Amino acid sequence: MAILVTGGTGFIGSHTVVQLLNDNREVVILDNLCNSKLCVLDRIKEITGKMPKFYQGDILNIEDIEKVFKENNIDSVIHFAGLKAVGESVAKPMWYYHNNITGTLNLCNVMSKYNCKRIVFSSSATVYGKPQSVPINEDFPLSTTNPYGETKLMIERILSDIYVSDKDWSISILRYFNPIGAHESGLMGEDPKGIPNNLLPYVARVAFGKYDHVNVFGNDYATPDGTGVRDYIHVVDLANAHLKALDRAAKVTGVEHFNIGTGVGYSVLDIIHAFEKAVGHEIKYEICERRPGDIDECYANPKKAYEVLGWKAVYGIDKMCLDAANWQKKNPNGYGD
Image 1 (cartoon, rainbow, N blue to C red):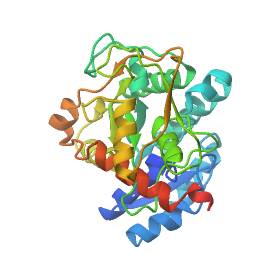
Image 2: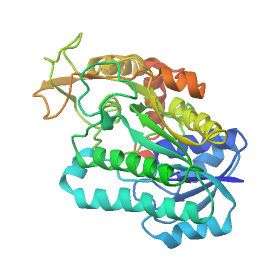
Image 3: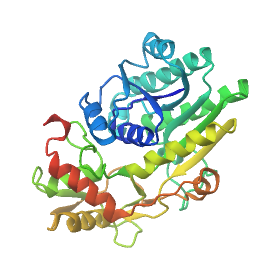
């Protein structure tokens, strides 16, 4: 029996595939490579000694999904595939709604046809919108502030409705906070196209001389140092949460939601200073105006994931930055080099 990983060559997907293979699980990847590169497969093999079965295809093309299910005995799915840039989603909302939602509907239709009814879905803390308090619990009110977040919330609702219609489904919804870091080998890491949208990859590029300085958007938030606070989690910790969720899905049916974070909030300056420690020199930054829509702080209460899944994050901020620095140093041009 195999596990289908959609988007399995992406940042989180590839690290999850490594953990699955190291746990001796059979893996099949479906990815259209729109935000990843084929050479990731070679990196996976170098780390694990195993080459996962790979299909280049798109979840918008139902025939691509059918081909995977016809040729493999798939019993569960980890669903990463989707567009994920907040700013881009605001500029191109129809593209995001069509890709993320239609693609998921196609996937679920094929899963149902082949009687594969276990899915772990890659959701996001963006479904909490602007929380009234922290830490954030899974039962907090849900709202979104951009089309990307709205697609995640809509898919959560679609999956819940699927279970209402068919109680054989086992659906685990993982709400990620802020994944950073890289594989400790330095062979795999985050490789954003163009100028990074997220803090850590940008800090890494400044640290190694690709950019001059980090823009810190606002230092007047109601936080200890005035900069925004987020829950950063090591990508390997996040990957391991998927293995725990798969084990859970094999035992129960229903729909369950889990926060996947450390439960600790780190500020923008905390991240910069931790990265300085990792590389051994100062990183230049400048304070800028706040960005519209940014909130003071956002971090998880991960208690449910520990109590139900038996999962908790084990890596702290120093390890996250050390591994990210190692990746950036060894791969200054990402996978493109």
